[in-house]
Amino acid sequence: MSADVRAAGAVLWRPAQTGVEVALVHRPRYDDWSLPKGKVDPGETLAATAVREIAEETGFHAVLGRHLAQTGYEVHAKGNGKLLKKTVDYFSGKAISGAFAPGDEVDELRWLAPQEAERLLTRDTDVRVLREFCALPADLTTVLLVRHAKAGKRDDWTGDDDLRPLSEAGRRQADALRELLPHYGPDRVFSAPRLRCVRTVSGVAEDLGTEVRHEPLLSEEGYWPDPTRGISRLLAITAAGGTPLVSSQGGVIPDLVSALADRDALDLPSTSGGVVPSKKGSLWVLSFRTTADGPVLVSADYHPSPLPLPAPSRA
Image (cartoon, rainbow, N blue to C red):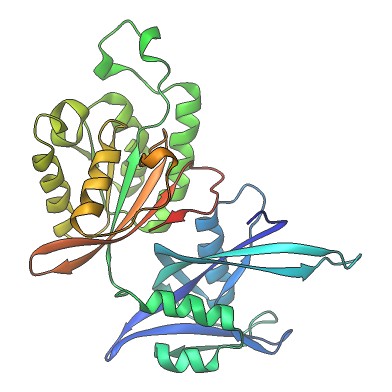
């Protein structure tokens, strides 16, 4: 949907004794109960908007998970009353810290079981978003799978291809990813050993105070002799918990994602010519459910560029 106004928000949740609770906010201006959301600021990604609006409306810092839904409707422009198209993208957002304080925009917050929250919500569109959140467990394991940023043309580089550095455009992409990825809460950083893969995520590792761990099985030359070993390595990283960030290559990511989706019967976002997308500097947000047999892929969101982010295509 082409939009004149973009916005983002989340189903903000926290663990509770009987499962999870979700946060609803009351806006006195509209006298409604809604999910926290707000308009995108210039130059802001959807993820950044969602996290900022959660903080402004609820007082809580959140870490994002899977993309839930996109809603669209018409609003009247201030001043001339012209009808504008507005889209809102919603994420799952886990409350990490913070406390609510009433203000002019939001005067009350309630933590409720999802069934209670559904009855209180004013708009049917919010109910549909909440139901999408409830369709899967809240506490999934998120894997952030990044393709390395731009590194110029292979034919223009005369040295060892493993040492081909990021281009100026690639450094900008890496900087944008450094801003974006913390909204998903990465806590460990892995990379195919090639310099361009490592440099794409080294800023995130530096901010975390950790090292980039080399993963030869997730490089093109390490993956293709035995793809099953590469897939098993990613699943082992996933099973260790937390939120791992993995940097790999365009010759690996499409096969890796499609193989996991086929294994776990997950329909991926519609693609051009049936090819799984993996542009340079792009991000796959992979969500896994923990089972006795190991991680199972239950959701996959593709973000084609780090800044600014269009709405992700979702499986």
